[in-house]
Length: 69
Image (tube, rainbow, N blue to C red; front, side, top):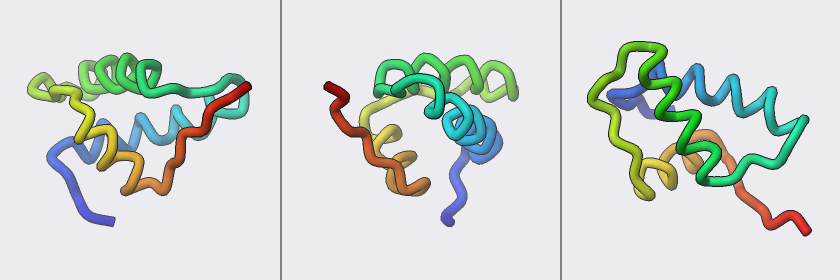
């Protein structure tokens, strides 16, 4: 896996994602809020969420968001 400037934040975020997805569906906006929260938690003040970051995060971790009906 390639490294990113936000590697520590992404590591914590992915661990949260793996646990949380068993309890409720995770959408892009939910992941955005949690990413911002995790960035503050690990001291990554310069993190800026974007659609391209989300797309790259999903690709790096093999995530696919599906519509829940």
